[in-house]
Each structure stands twice: as structure tokens, then as C-alpha cells.
Image 1: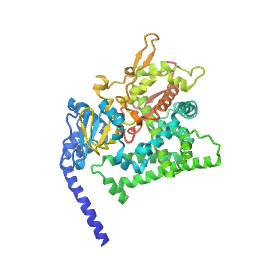
Image 2: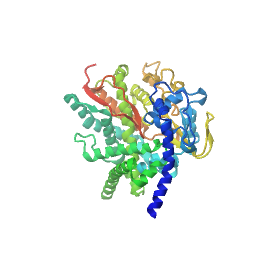
Image 3: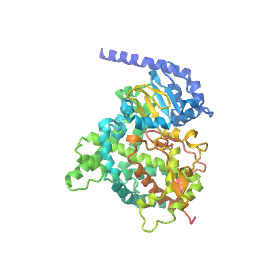
Image 4: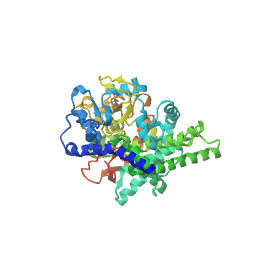
Length: 518
């Protein structure tokens, strides 16, 4: 009897989906045409009863950032850089590139636009209640305790010890070996390894040695599982039918089974870091508590799940964002010899006398501009979603209803002619610079954080912004003084894809060449 009831329930549940899939088949030709067309999108996708525009959205899911950009670039100017997409079952999704809207969402009406239940629910399996997936008092506590890891003292220590050691002991010797052996490296993978070691050292007081020559197996297995968990978590958002992933999770099938296995490996690894740190603190009561994990554990938060959530969030932030920014940066440099020449002029051929990474980084004005320009075009986090806590009206006049998804889109914003001019498609660090009249030196001219929203803005502005720039400048100076990064394929055109953070699809295969006397 129970089996019969279960079968009936499943049949009733899946019948609507069979009906909707038949609709999808009916419109297959239209969606394929939309996906394959090289002509720009000129109007919003057609919306149908019950399913909204999900067919067109699904057809473009592999290039969603590019599609949204084309949509906003080519729709009516009266939309003020904002589009609203119809999702299934009457849900609506507002996506904006309007800086006034971004300021409204991230600062002026900050508490009206939390991460919300939708995002928290979809990412909870992976991120739990970590800082990037929570709101309210939980978020406030995590941000407050994390802020100590980014003060001036911590930043100096990070640059002078962690980054310098990882560069001189691992990254540069690896590149040197590669030049001798004329081997091919996946620069994206190498930089992820570099960044993973960095964040573990500074945040957890733990050196995984992920970039060491042996490429240790536990860390490799963890990294593979971490990447899979990231991809599968974001895949939930791309489902045509909201909540279908919950059914798959309940029956432990398909992508949800894979996600469960991957998350289990990630959490086991992160939990082992927490337990090792607990043991270390118990055995050495006088141990310095400068690293973030020690500070969390000494704050009285001994809930292992909570602390593990924080560890996973910091690994995500420290491993994936700076490595993504640097990957795209080195590709752009390989295509722009003028920029390469200017950076080499700035950093010099050798380390300056009395060399100090922290002090040197402050003077790398042109490099700073080049990094900003790279992230304008290829932001590590291409979009960020919120959920309206109540009805509201945005500065551009668009009406927001309670529960509506609201997303600001740094990737599309970096491609708006209204924000960056007719030459927005060009890689031009000089757009961030001006010459000082007396000295003739470059002076950095930043954009407000609502126009250049790569690091968020307002109360949730990225705590690690300064640390990220210091790390990236250290890598740029260390690598470019000695080596040239050359794509294996001439004319290599990487594909920008994003999960929780941006990636080059398939990695970035390069050869490393010793720099000559230029």
C-alpha cells in the first residue's frame, strides 16, 4: 500500500514536468537559433505562461554572462542599464548595471537587500552558514572577527613572509624548471595552488604545500572535490524548474549525488584543519593567535560545523578570486606588449636595494591600474545576487517586489559604453591614470565602488581587497622580472565561464620563458 501511494505521488509530481518538457521541445528551434546566432540580442526574450523565459535562459546558460551583457547593451536606453527576466511560476529576476541602483542595493538600502533565503538554501549544502552565505547577526560576527586578519600589521606579515616565501620557494623555482624542461603548465591551476597555500597560511596558520613539487595527494583530491562542489552548487540555479534539485537530493541521484560526495570530501578536509588547530591550541596555551582560525576558536565558538563553514568560505575567497584575476591578467599582458613594457619599466629588472614587497607594492601605480583594468573586463565574481526583503523602487524607477531576485552584474558593467566610453572593449590601463604635472609620474585615479563593483561596496565591501592587491602585485613583480608567460597556442582566445567565481574554460596552457635583457 505504501509503495502504491509513493508511486502515485511521484507520478503526480512528475506529470507537470513531462508537460513542460513537451513545451520545451516545441520551442527547441527558437532557443537553438537564439543560442547560435552571432547577431546581438535586441530585445527581451519572449515570456510564456507558467515557464516565463526559462527556455531562452536555459539555452544561454553556458554563456549567461555574455548573453546578459548583450541583452543590456542592446535593449532600449530607457531601461537605464536594467533588465527584468521572467522565470518559472511567476518569479521575476532584476539584473542591473546602473551604478545608482548598485549604490542603493549595497549601501543606501543595504538591509532591504540581504543574500536572502533563496541563495542561502541553494548554497547551504556547500557553504553552510559561512560569511558569504548568511545575513544578520551571524554575518556581523563573522565579519567583525575576520576584520582583524586584514589590519596593517597582518597585511605586512602576509606580504613579507607568506607571499615572499611562496614566490621564492615554490612558484619561481617551478617556473625556472619549466623553462629548462620546456614543459607546458596550466597557469590557472598553478595560480590556484599558489593562492590556496597563501590563504591557508595567513588565515589558518597551516601550510598545505599544495604548490610544492610533489603536488601532495590529499590537497589534490580536496581541490578536485572543491571545484566539483562549486560547479554543482551553481548548477542548481540554472535548473528550469525551481526546486527540482531538491527532488534529486531526496532520491540521492544525478548531480545531487555527485554534490553530496564532493561536499563530503571538502568538509572532511576543512574539518581536519579545524581539529588540528584545536589540538594545537590545547597543547600550546601560549601560542600566538594571529591567524584567523585561532581567533575564531578562542572567541568561544567551538561549534565545529560553524567553524568549518567559515574555513570553506575563506578557502573559496582566497583560492579562487585572486587566482582568477591573475590568470586573466597574464593572458591580457601576453596580448598587450605596450602594457608589458610599462610594467617592466615600473618594477625594474632587479629587486631594489632594501627590497620590501609591502613598500614596493604601494609604488606600483601602473601595475595597479593594469590589474583594475583586467578585473573590469574579467571580474573574479561576475555577478552578485540579493533578495528583496520588501517592496521597493530603485533609483532608475524600476519596481521591486518582496522576494524578488535582484542582481548587480560587474561583468556587464565593465562592458557598458555609458560607463567606460566607446573604447570599453579595449584593454587600457591608462584609463585609470593621469600624469602629475610636476613629477611627470603616473597617478592612479580610481572609480567609485558602485561603478567598479568588483569588490562589492557598502557594509559588505570585500575585507580582503588590500590583501588581494598586495598578493597580485607581489606575483606580477616576482614573475615578470624573470619570466615571460606565453600562451601555448598563438591567438589563444579563452572562454569566460563562471560558477561561484570566474574561470577560463579548460584552463590556460602556457610556456614559461626566461626574460632577456629587454
